Length: 244
View 1 (cartoon, rainbow, N blue to C red):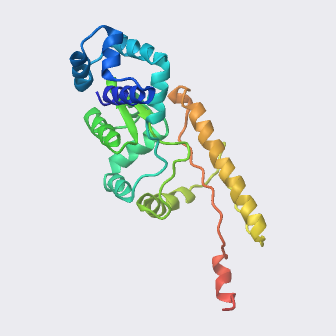
View 2 (tube, one colour; view 1 turned 180 degrees about the horizontal axis):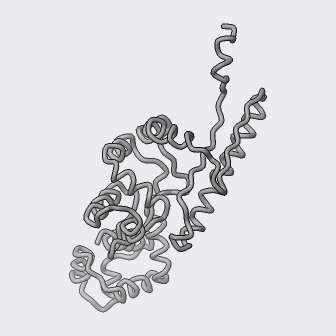
View 3 (cartoon, rainbow, N blue to C red; view 1 turned 180 degrees about the vertical axis):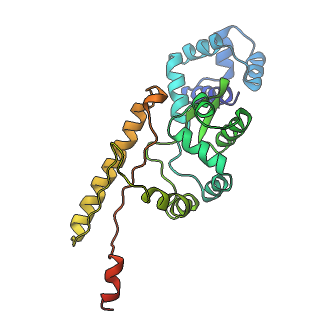
């Protein structure tokens, strides 16, 4: 229903932009103006009726849907309150991570020990947070922009540092396909900026690969962690020897 309302809102805005009035629509459709106003107020349109109105604006139905899609806000970052809400509910946070990884409702309930009612509750909450659109039959549409990131130093990053980072690094990294590289050395600021740009490019490439792999069967996809990091750093045992 929310999507229907949003499409009708897009239709209204497009009508105004085209300079057409309800009276113009009424004449074009052979209806009374009062009837047209009632239909817009009730937001009860058949697809055929919407297409007729599009024709009055000299546009295709597909163009209206493109305008609708463009009007949908794709979030690049949550608010701090939203991040706190996720951290406060571990199951909600996990479901948020699952959908960010392009898992659907059937994937989540089939792969993880999560009750269907709890999964639907979490998906409905993520819809209210505008992270996803929850569509009929529990289909999920992500509203996260490709540039999405957590708040630097925010609740999610603090949770990651406290609960996830050390657990990840304690792994042996000796299984097939695992890799761990750690380098330390003296670098100029120019070189540090160059590495930062390349790390950013690699993170974008990883996100693109994730989107491409979303179409593969779930059994062909494996949970994978990648940590990219760069900071000024001194090896702990050397610190007592540093001059102030």
